[in-house]
Image (cartoon, rainbow, N blue to C red; front, side, top):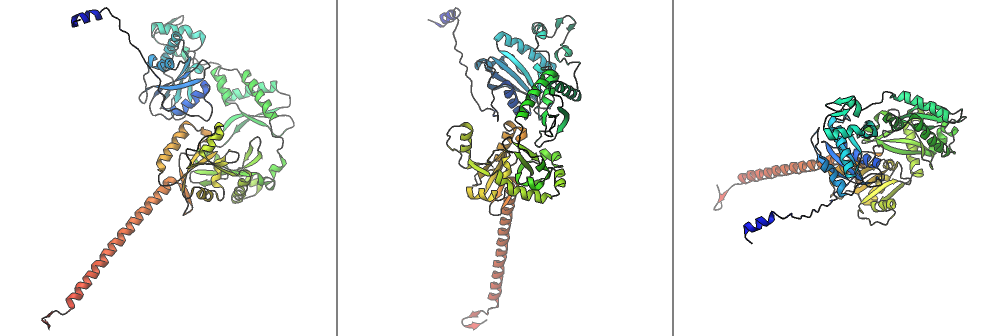
Length: 544
């Protein structure tokens, strides 16, 4: 068949093509908790996206049980914008066989204020999802730096059934809505971002909670306000509830409950009912072996002393009222262990030292002597630790990495201040070593064999802290080093500076020695010339 005939035949043919698309796995995000719910996925994504320097649009795909399958970066934009089409947003969901999605995008500026474009995108996604039978569970904005989130489902009316007509009208007619009084060329902000007029501030909410609890609990129960100050950024506002004739109470944060009521997802009565259940459980599990009278006597309590290490800058305000010992950018504090089974401890404060009439030096001497007894050091290979966590036998593929903690695996990084700890580790690894602050609960030990670059280790620590470690468990972004010969524990950066300085001094000394040597040789040469000149010359046995 000639070319003209072939072309004529092609006009009557509908060609067949095969589309082969596949998902490609590439890394992932890790969490200290199972990522088995939408909220868990949003939490780990928010931590990661809070560190980004540009706007990213991401989608989390979920199965029919609303369990996260994977996430996909849809687009990367500029400092203040990122474009994302509906087709690209749903692409990975279709390939993942997802039943629902959660859209997330970040604002590097730290602002949580949604724009009208954000609202319009949300509306169009809801409608597109209905057509494809892929439900849009939420659209989340992540604030850069803080990691705080804004939920369109919680904070707006876009996902409410009563506003479905608004969304449908918008999808059909673009930017013009026709719904009774809502006739405008744009979307009225009080429709999309409707805020309840009867919202209350935190003080009013706490008063209502106390009143509701008083009605639900036994008469005589004491319910009071309390603002709890804790290390590692875990301070909170809440209430303390004491049963009648008891000096021990249960403290509960009500900040999350306040957010739930403000978002409209729960009522005051509902959260009060949940708090009552939590209190009942807490009272049942309350330690029964705490000797209140013993707390007044330091001699009676000093055998319960142990140590905790925290980041100094993160806890600067709290440490002003707490006796502490600084080690580089870390601070060691002391606690009483009042009930090991339930993890009940008491942080030693400056006021307590005054009442006990003891010095800070005495406190730390007693704590450093007692801590290894009640919370002894445990050092294992990284492979052994992973095997314990997973319950499976795992080959130790990283024999040079050790994990140091205490026997309870809680606040175990404090072993860094145990007497003899550094020397014991140096004997174990055979010399100098790096210390990586995995969290306040454990340390990673890596032998300094000359192959490790401390800056690479710092980068790894920083990335893990930003994506995996909870802020309440974070210890430091720095790496430390122990010089076994000189018995110096310091920041790895300082050790590097010392080594560089030594090398410069050594080269300078070699250079000075070389220069002096050259001068000596020249002097000797000059003396030889002088001596040679002073020696009488002879010619045929006659002096000249």
